[in-house]
Image (cartoon, rainbow, N blue to C red; front, side):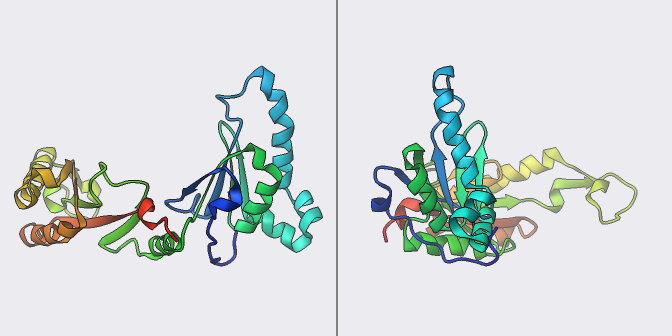
Length: 252
């Protein structure tokens, strides 16, 4: 595993022949910005081709182990590679990398068995990944990276979480713990419906999508809706999630 934040390097399509290149929405396992998908998942395996894949998987497995890394790179750099890579050989087979140099090394040895490569695909994409990684989870407004818009139309989501009206006391005094309360389903769903109608009255049915306690909207209207909701329903917590679509940041 890496010991410090590395500068992400961009995947250039010309460097990987005819392989499919795909931008990531976040780091895999919270650590690896690069991933390759490999041939030979369990659906494709037959008795006939199993003997072909077995030695290939064995060679791949050895690449991730210290003896081969040390022999190729030396002691210190071998340890670095072992800690900064991951091989998943189960129902499907994938390899993960912290650094692009290790991805490229792996690619040079096993490119014939690689189906797809994922990672940062532009400088804008790198900046977006940094932005999402460094934002505080307590911020009312969050940004996420996605392959596509919500419901292929909306770039933002407003989530509302009813608080005091959603629970009723079970008796025994207020100790500050929620276990002394139970969800008041009738009032809760009544309030959810009321909040949904509140949004509908502001933007119109054609300009939003309702899904339980989430409303999907355009970013140009969502903050205004959240402000009006806060004014009328002060006890309801709200949060906004805005999408960064990979296709829009794929150009260098």
